[in-house]
Image (tube, rainbow, N blue to C red; front, side, top):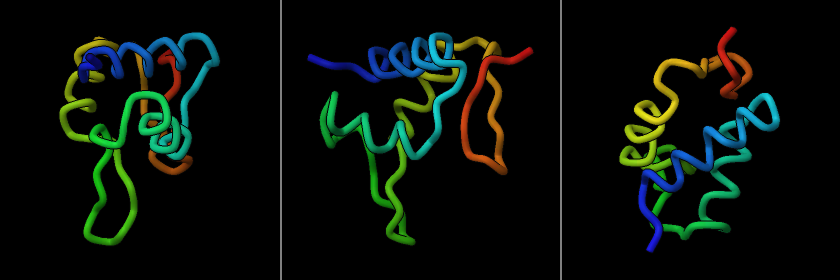
Length: 78
């Protein structure tokens, strides 16, 4: 069974391997790969990564990943 930690690890691996991961790409691939229970629909109708996954993601990267708010992607810090 998939856990939030599994998805967080997948996200970190993608960022380290590919250099970045867009929010749009993650929101599309997480339900396809891991199941729809790991995303949520916001009041504005947009889809977002579950809070549980994001909390585990923050723990998993340990400050080695940065968020680009304007372009809406994570990349390796540095």
